[in-house]
Structures are given as structure tokens and as C-alpha cells.
Image 1: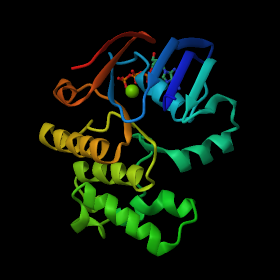
Image 2: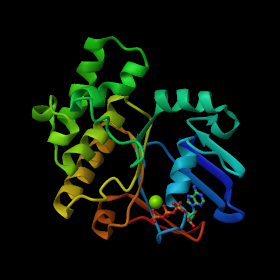
Image 3: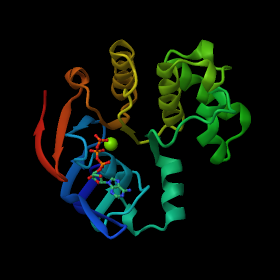
Image 4: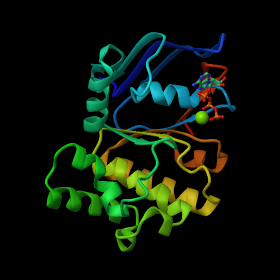
Length: 227
Ligand SMILES: Nc1ncnc2c1ncn2[C@@H]1O[C@H](COP(=O)(O)OP(=O)(O)OP(=O)(O)O)[C@@H](O)[C@H]1O
Ligand SMILES: [Mg+2]
């Protein structure tokens, strides 16, 4: 069974009398353990597709399956619960909470899940360690560099031990060295723990590190590569 399957996904945004067809019939399958980049020009539909696969938004048409569950048939609350249990998100709109430390941010999803404090701190600390941030656990986001904040966001996604991590331009706003280091950490987690990753990126240097590249143009998948 694939971990992610989009079948004939269309997305039309409607508002102010304007319609935008952001996705025009996307079929995509990801098998468990994939480490895949989603590329394409600005406006091609990458963020839209990631939001739909995360269940943050619904397709206008088509089916979205994650871990054998048909997401587009769930209510908003059920989708939120599903995300909490199974999907890690690294999206710009889901930034760190400024009033929480790195450790508390990384533990936040686990708190929502109702884990005890020692258990969630143990797991959050392990995720911070895996991202090279153990010594920064007590710092607030404003006391961290952009790259460190981005890594805390990845640690938060991983602390929950998800099946799948969806990331929208996780290395945007990082210098190239920090961006590569982040991707290498993600790659190690993919190889060592089998977490499936799908992330969008505009950075051609990162593409050398992925197993598969999926290309979107104007709302359609137009090609794939296995570098
Ligand atoms: N909430 C929205 N309402 C209306 N149109 C939208 C909305 N979000 C995105 N769009 C439009 O849908 C299309 C796809 O946008 P999307 O954000 O998915 O592109 P993208 O590939 O992520 O681009 P970028 O690389 O710039 O982040 C664009 O034409 C965009 O203007
Ligand atoms: Mg985008």
C-alpha cells in the first residue's frame, strides 16, 4: 500500500469573482520510505498540493489517501486529529510559538496528544539531538538563528514519530550551507528510521540528495526523475 496517493486531484480557488485552477488533475503515489522533492516554477501548485496532502485544505475534485485513510472524506476535526497522530508538517504558516522554548516547541504536538511531561520531553529532546540542537533546547525562538529555528520545526515534526513528513520549502531563507546540513539531517532520519519525506524546494543543490524528483508545472505533474 502506498503511504500517499493522490488520484485526479483538482483544486480551484474561488474568491473575489476570480477562479484559479491551481491543480489540474494530479496523480501521485509515494511508497513508504521515499525521500522525494517536489519542484516547479512559482505558482505551479506545490504549496497547494502539500496543503491538500496534509489535509489542511480539501481538493475540489479527486481523492487523497494517506496511510490507507481517505483524507478528503474526513471532517475538519478528523483531519486535524489524523495530522496530529500521523503527519509531521514543516510549513511556513506553522511557525514556532515564540513563548515556548525549543524543547517545548518540539514537544508541543505530543502535549496535544496527551503524553505525560517526562515522556514528551524525552522524545522532544531525542528529536532535538538528532538535529544537532541539544545544547539549544532551553532557548526561545528569538534566541536562535533562522537555520536553528527551521531545525526546531523539523524536530517538532519528527518528535511525533510520524509516518510522513511534508515540508514546504524547508530550506528557504537559509544560507546554502545550513540548508544542505538540514537536508542531510532529514536524509539520515529517512535512512535510519524510514520516515517518508516529501518537500518542495527551489534549490537545485538540494536535489542531488533526493531519491526522486517530481515536477509540477501549471497545476500538472509533468515529469519525474530518479537522480
Ligand atoms: N488561497 C488562495 N486563493 C487563491 N489563489 C491561490 C491561493 N493559494 C494559491 N493560489 C494560486 O494557486 C496557484 C498555485 O499556488 P501555490 O501557492 O500552490 O504555488 P507554488 O508552486 O507553491 O508557488 P511558490 O513556488 O511561489 O511557493 C497560484 O496561481 C496561486 O496564485
Ligand atoms: Mg509555495
